[in-house]
Image (cartoon, rainbow, N blue to C red; front, side):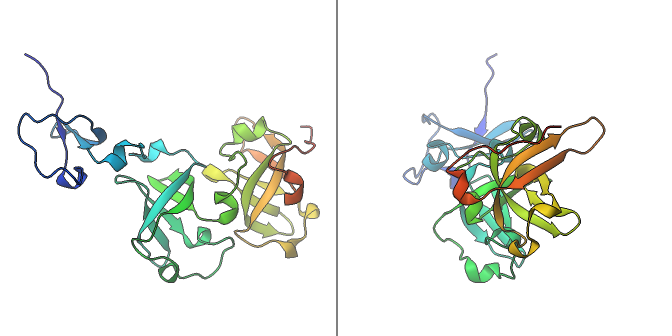
Length: 238
């Protein structure tokens, strides 16, 4: 007996020009966007916008640092809920709506159904796709730093991050993608020049990866005018 792979296409995922289908009609191209194990079928879409070009259908399709076009769905007080495809949604918190952390009411900044905006994937945590709209990150052409392993092999390289802590004793805390974060020693920066959420250009000076210990990433601030789209900085020997 021949086996069949069954796919279910909801009416909302049919092409706009297709009004009706009959048994035996040939559907030339579908894209699987989900699965229903209990029913034993796949969930598919025939919409051209889903097929060509192929947008993400799962959160795992979008690595940290990737740029995406998103449309707003709702603007609660904590930020904004956006759609990046018909099956993937993401969130932008108030900390990532503007360049620095401020008391911004998202409901006054965004409008439902507005033209898509370009955002960037910060991380996927607890099945949530977290995005940023910070211009310094969205417009950055440098490689995104998304792992401590990459930092350990990239001593001297430049990366763009954002300030998540300013402390006279602990230093300037800079966070990157996938919650990778490091510190600029306190005696190497002026506290009055930096604010929470501010985008900064830094260089990796050292990244220690030791079994049983938390990674330790040491950074140095770099003047944007010195980056020239890339570059290196003298690393600190371990």
